[in-house]
Image (cartoon, rainbow over all chains, first blue to last red; front, side):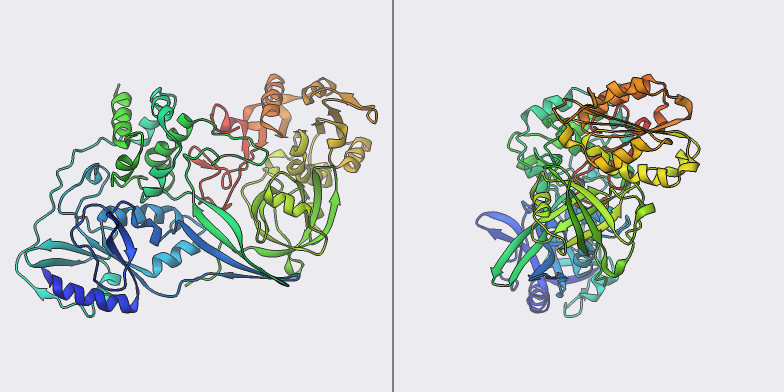
Length: 334
Length: 275
């Protein structure tokens, strides 16, 4: 196996931080979050699951799509194209899996979403395997694993005295210049993939339960707070809005921005004039789960859930996606 | 690396702005270099007032009458549409599209075509009605049953008069409640159906209007025996992207901006969130 000491890893990260936009897990006032870093100082190497996914760095919560300048009647539009390369370090495998889910719609369905593709192209994803599964995790139920290399460019696993390095893609290999690698005998031990397996019912089984009373039960207690969507590595609904950034005599500058949206929000489906074709919380909760396990896999291929468990631990009223999955599997069996 | 984005609008120019009612205006738009929009009846565009926002609007002009421009009939009801209503001829707006699937005119040739628009629902149907009229010999009977709430809310009144005057179009107009200017029919749109006889097997029906109207118009159409696969509706959704990404127009596993906005009744029958 390829091996790197933690000291050598830090040297490499310090160098990367000079050359690219480097993002890594950090402790932010007691919360573990992926954040931009200027050096290896403050980068966490031992952490559980960052509270937010890394989605924000590929599909930002607020992303400027266009800059608009209006001089009298003259209007100019410019697309914002990020120039610098980006490295996401210390990604948990479920976060890379989430990017692959979004790829299936934004990159693999025509027309390609150019803004997302630019973010994806400039980014290299360096994973750090979870040594075991955490509270709420069920990645092994939905095609993932705490040490899955799929969808990453490089995967690191903690071993005695440092990390084993697995090169997954050419993009990952290209990043290795400057990393002092050693060859060591043996292979890193696999992570403890001991989480409970949650049943995933096929789309056609979900379809038989569209009218089930469980949607009423889960929906009744939903607060429409949308946190489940915002912490999800795979949710990708968005809104597009304009905002004026400066007004001077003869020159008005504004931006067209794309912002995360959530199908669980009250006004998500409100049309002009006020008609709302998905007016109830049970209907909206049902849509969220059907999107993940029925519509998304049928329309685009992958499941819309990577089993990270963030929505379970974030929900203020304890709506548990695994309880829903079990409920559907049990009911559709009968 | 690509720089052309699906979110980058073309700069259109408003060449004419005409008041139609207190709420609706008709906008005539030219694209740069006089290029054609190349739309089908029933498709929509994403219209931007730059700095205010973008909204999906159905195209009301017929491709058969393009003259290097296209028309949108827009009700002022939100930020973007209110800003549009404040704009004059000569102003610049953003245009993306056309998007979606329109009315399948090929499947209508040789058949009787019954149009049943309600209120602003005439805007998308007018595109198809005028195309059908311009290719009149390819179709059987052409019937238009149009209803609005009040006389002063009727749209395209000159054109309605033209259609009424033609002997190859059966056009009936009603209002829910009349006033002193109105000597025409009074009653909801379904009260017009007894005026026309319909050969259901050979009829294609096309309807668009507010959700409550669909319920009653569909009952009429189905009651006449028109097959579910021959009834077309145009659904309203607040699309944010127009290209199947943003999720807003999703009706279960279907994207209104991709598969729609035109659907047959057979496609949406029993689909809880469709209407």
